[in-house]
Length: 170
Image 1 (cartoon, rainbow, N blue to C red):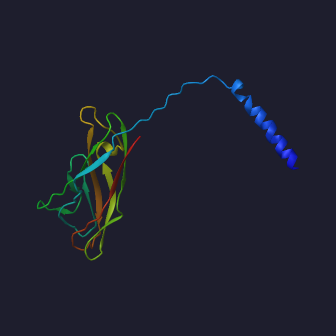
Image 2: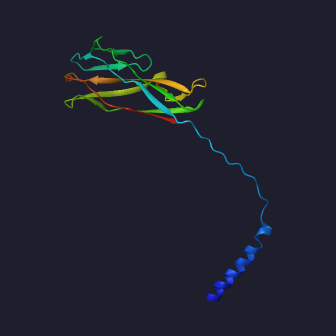
Image 3: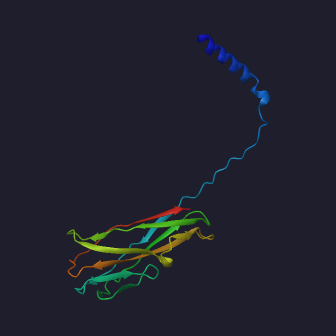
């Protein structure tokens, strides 16, 4: 059996010795890589639903993602803090599509652990999740609005929470 293995190795060495004569002509290949400018998000303003007095019947309070306007069908919206939409700026590579995803909190919490329900968060431009970095500045600006629901017996306090905005090159 040992001779068989050595004999097979000798035949393989003989065949390999003739391989250069059978080789194809070398072909030139091109290698390339696209290196993109890092995509950045910068928070300019936080989302703030403002100062609210509940009606006692259950209230929705909304902030428009495009204008920042605050509305409610029944709650009293105090002018002392009219609230505002969240605003972000993004920069990156010119003329590249960017996809946006918001991960909203389920609830905002006050210091006592009471919950204020977040019913939705929305992007400006009709909740469009696709943006293009402008050719001139390689930047776009983004507004985020949303809606909260105050229960009929909503506890008073300052309610806070966080959400995540993710931007990804397409």
